[in-house]
Length: 309
Image (cartoon, rainbow, N blue to C red; front, side, top):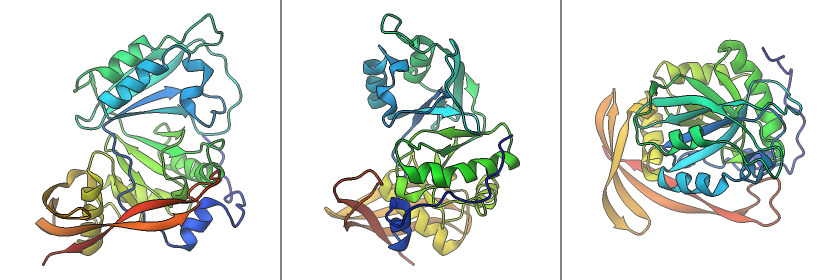
């Protein structure tokens, strides 16, 4: 079990998560649309861009093709705590299909020399296979601690890893970039594909316990990755207005396009009101530095949501 850090490593005032919190940047609808994940055990420090890792030599074109065809995402994962180099010839993989709540588990062999390509045949086959996969998916909590991608992920993520591992030992993994570094600490709950952000060692356990009990708190909800971003935004607002419920069991659809930036969205499944209609309007946020490594400013998209009575 990981040793629990006493505090977040100090971050400079210009860190992206510090600035994002200061301007109260909205979390809603920031879960990257994804239906399937390939989790590859890599216990060493990860490069900034994991698909450039030498350990994946020879497999990247096929990985990219499956990412596109399956609306997938590849993550490097490791157990809680700091890890050094490990040249193990055999490592684990898990493929999680969120739409069917199923998974496939196996072994892969990394590349360590230019003459020895990575052996990812079983992992690639499972990643590409039609769902459902072979086993019911097990509950997992993935926390981004990807230091080389963004300092905020490591500084804010590691205390959350330790707190969650203490509560759910064996279910918590450190993972590579989840997206939205400025919302660190970020947690992906699988197999339900729910992204939570701005967690810390003090609120993470309660937030995840509530979520697992069917009481997802809108305060931390970035969205459910299997939902359209416009539906993600509407679901967050329904939870905020009507109270917590199971976000990933709610569903929604765009019922009408009002103009290029506004839609009518119908949300189904909240226990207090089974059918809710929302007006969802896209809003462009002013250019800002969105990551710690950014050298230029970028806009971001958020949504304003009004529920119909």
